[in-house]
Length: 386
Image (cartoon, rainbow, N blue to C red):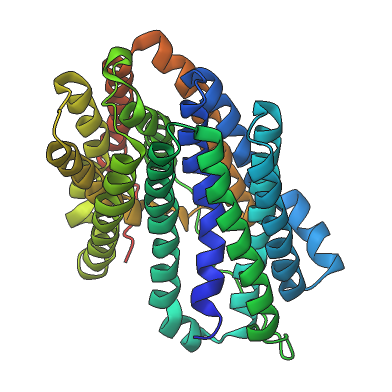
């Protein structure tokens, strides 16, 4: 308990900043959706290339050394980011550096956790680890965005200065993490060998199910954020940073946690044959919610929060089964690389497609992609997940 909560909080924070806060920052800077999604899609590259760089990196230093080094470098990178917000090119390059450091830090943390803890210990601390990661999301896309919005009001819409102050704070936080973990994270005296779970053969139905859901969510993941932030003149809902932080970092995360917990509980109690239609239906709900919001343009924060809460609840519920099926993929690190690539490509084109189609038609296309999951679940080849 001295190091697991802080380590997994530090693991989750940069990912939220790179994948969510960068969208908010770039949109406030006036960039168009097509350019934003193309830039943010490149942040998946370190995860796509992970099977190539991980064996080479971890031959030189052990996991503990890498996690301490990357936390120090992340602190420096956030400090540099705070100074560079006047230049879009420098801001993008530093976000990319942070994405790379975050991917190395994630690999180091997970490997260290598996090596120093037994199966029983990992089972005991599983909920602590997950709770800490959820807290990092609340702080990242909730509190930080809300504070940045309040600072923009205080400094009369000085966007760059407001975000600089927030990145100074994040940099200081990572310096503290580095110094604390230098003391609290024990050295690896007895490294346990970790045997990865074996994966079964991949059926065509499983591939279709994973591909349809992955494409649908990847198309939604970044454009949905831009939709919430865009003004009504551009077809969005026009949320302020404070409102966005409350809706996505508060209501959304609570609903996501409830949904994923519910999904794991259901999978342990019922067979795939009983639950597959419900799981496939849950995967359609996020696209339908955003389609309805783009058509009706709700004006009250309560209505928007209710719709976001519903889609996050169903996303968490469906994603729990998606993760279970992902374990059926053979390939170890390569399947995670494939998953990252499956997100990179749709995200890259999603902004351009939204500009061409507008929000309602774009969300309608995402719903059609999600509907491919129904084609897969109707096939008996998908195995029982129990």
